[in-house]
Image 1: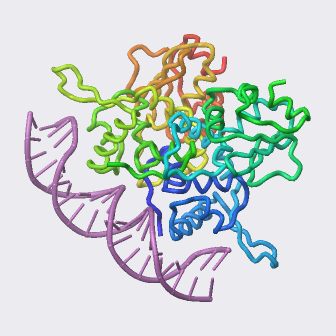
Image 2: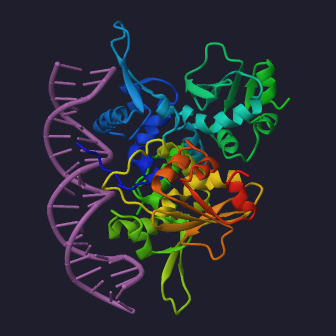
Image 3: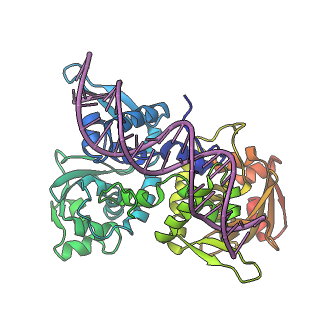
Length: 210
Length: 210
DNA sequence: CGGCATCCGTGACGATACTG
DNA sequence: CAGTATCGTCACGGATGCCG
């Protein structure tokens, strides 16, 4: 059964035929943090209905954005993960998130929040600050934690804390927003005490602007 | 009446709340070529229904992406044009189009085609080749024509031919695709005779790779 | 004729309940 | 846990009508 298409011979239309449906890009945002199970995806995508999520995952698998993989027998669970083609969306989504960050003002009472939703804007900021250092940075944000991995192959991020981070950042949503919007650089925020840093390796020093 | 939102405190979600509805990004693609009237928009967006187009234009005006402007009395028409906020989407849409270009294989019989739909991928290619030259390039593609303006303030494009172009490119959809996908550089395509160049100023020479 | 508004049929979406 | 089934609602696409 053919899915609906804009039927235009245009690079942008073709991209939207694949990732333009409701929820698709947000599912990719979740999977950019690494392989995840259906239930975890559903938990971090508040508002999506179970059937729409199941449908999207099938479509995205057909389109070569993700693969479904069974874990080893004891786990007996399936995880979804991005293919290289899916990961190639990171640059475009980064610029789209940059654009959206300018719209992001106050947190409305109805707004859900997960720490790793700010990983995309922070990724580039941290990578630029850290260069040429490499390593892992834990980010603790309003009760949630994720970590960012900086190496030559391009930065990435994942859920939860790292096993042995080179540095740890602690901040709240306001501080994170200021950095994401580029209003205030990270070392500045650290000096003001609005962002805490742990660690004393070269990466931690780089984040402090030293 | 509040529009539907993902209700997530996330830069990417906020961007999608504004440009994630069906047709919105394609309307922006059209307006990146300059101010346009309702009827012309409708003609270059085959498949959009009249009411959806009218609704989107109102929403986009409310969201500060576009403005509606009445032309001088003799014309008695209204045009829609992008605000600076709307124009800020060009970098993100360029990367999204780059990603989509990889998916763009054969032209299906049902696919519509307009020359300026390839302006976005060509824009950066031409700007990089031309630097540090400035000027205007006409592009004739499969019966349609648009022109690209290269100057320090960032490249832009518009419908139809320029009044006095510094160079003129002539190519078909296949050749355009090869360049858009980065498979073959423009000077290479010119040497192979798959892209024609008129003009002998510095800009035309730069496009030839000289 | 340009610029929509209205009506209507279809399909996508969201919430809940249910099942292997 | 990982979805499928059901159902009401809304968004979309196509056609037509209205009004300056």
